[in-house]
Length: 417
Ligand code: GLU
Image (tube, rainbow, N blue to C red; front, side, top):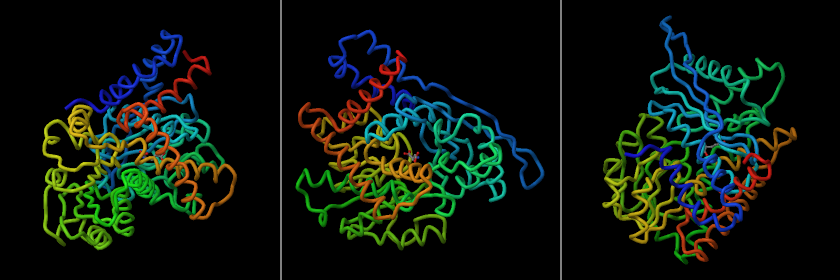
């Protein structure tokens, strides 16, 4: 399987040729593209951690700061055994593209620690978050780099990191982290924001296709914060969520699942299994369904399993879930792929609102948050959809065309190339 970072670079190359005509100075443009394919800085540190047993453990951690031509680096922190330098580089590249796609004033960053957080106690996790934030302190801040949650991290981890960071700098700076608990300056609507954003994109897309939601069936791979909220909101709106899965496998009911019941069961038992007929993660990707929603990790749909995918629409809620090889095959079969950089941008967009609120020392209502979020995603969807129709290109290419141009223009204006 190709690496995630190779895929991210290929996606940029895929639109470079289309964009070139817009730049009279081709040499300058080519230089900018090459620069855009490399993160500006990749930080790495092995963190030492005193375990509850008294022994010292060490865990490799990263932060990739991809490009800050449009604003401070922005992006989550992931705790997962699969974290690698290649992965954070890819994820930070996708963050730069994502922020530019929806037009919020950030560049891209991503951090991660190679760890299965389930194997640590709560106090060990807390010490790990403190150690990681101390390591990052010189490199982050509201106008430098603004981290947030990602896979296996949430408000609790952001609170610990904020504490360690503020202790080091000696004053409050809540706008350094987003996705914080409400009590510490988090925003209303941030927890469900990524799912909510995907839901708005789905509605916009179906409007253009004149499809009715009642008949539309959905399968969601990944039942973390993103997958759960997306499934919950889709079900509430009348869509039929027929399958969901987590790392232990999936559950299936052609008549539709009770999404909240599955979540309560997962919270009690640790997995979605037990309430309905079961299926594997690979089976979920290949069931007969209208809309397939990969909401877990990269490369879920790849050249090995793509031939069995039956869905006519893929709505990417994970980052990088479809490999470029798989995408080519799907596009040749007229499958619409609604790209990650649009579908899951709701999370970082509400992070932006949180940052704005923190900088102003002010609070927005949830209604205001959702109204603003819907406005931003509707606009981005319409811009992308217009490009799809005018240029006869895929949704991903349309999003990248817009985003890469915005970043390269900012780089040129700054005189970075
Ligand atoms: N981790 C999320 C993402 O991949 C959110 C990032 C953020 O809020 O900065 O988009």
